[in-house]
Image 1: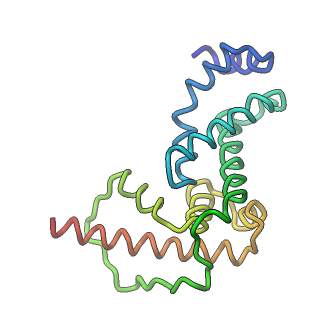
Image 2: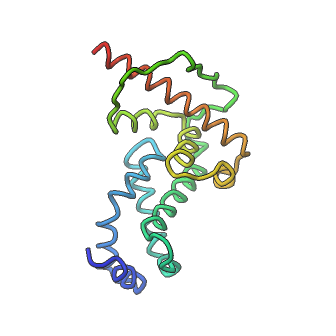
Length: 183
């Protein structure tokens, strides 16, 4: 790939070759980001395609301040959130009052090494709302107030979903560590 600044300038002029270079360079990273927000790769690929359309349409708005990759990641995350809102009625999800609190106080994980794939799998197994809040807070670094605004939920809902997601992850990692010990 050429110099990023040159690619951006050419993309602002709708240069198809520059758009392809940009896509080829950043698609793997942005697909990985989209995969954290959905259950299957096909849906993540749809989010990626929609996000790249937005990137190419809005690239003239990119001022050059801050990280270009960060700017694109924000578009992917917002696209994933929009997808979540649009399709939320189609997902099997649990209302927060329907899920019992997961007790983890007595769980101890001894010297368990988890692969990136195992951790990713555990996070992907969370109920949709929990996974969305967990990713936004723990991985992307958003504050609960920002998450509440993005997802159109109350701040306390964001906080409790994160807390319950964390406990569920700890429980699943404990179970996984027990499997590793007995294997």
